Length: 216
Image (cartoon, rainbow, N blue to C red; front, side):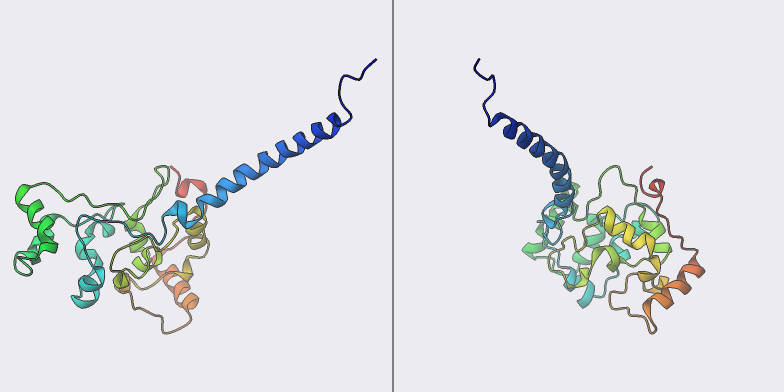
């Protein structure tokens, strides 16, 4: 009687099983790896904005503090973007005819807000509060990089779970005096971790790594 399966059938069977097992492992691993790449996080990719706002000029040249435009960072979970009226507080007096500022003037007189595009994004299932970080000594530069050196703002850090946990496990590496939260040029006069440990004790900083810290 002729055999129902060819001699190669057994090899094909085990090859398919092996490929299935590899796929079960490789696909999730590949997706996890992809989620951490700049292609997925948007890191280092400048966002096109409705106005060509140059942070180098406003921060370094004019000395405007981060909290002047992003006042919510001290009091709420959302740092906020400046209202058009805030921008016009200066631009009603300087660069009044500049075509670069035309969208700001149009927004102000029409009452239609500018549609700024978000640069730093977190998933909806992640809870993040700017104010608690600011009041515990985490500087703007820790998550946003040297914004004062960016002509066009981009996400400087990946803001992945690994990135956040790295700081939560050893917060003393990132802490600075509250008076220097927005100071991009601040540098400790002693070893960074020594200063950080002192600040952590003074400000009551805890190493929070349980799930409910960020997922509520």
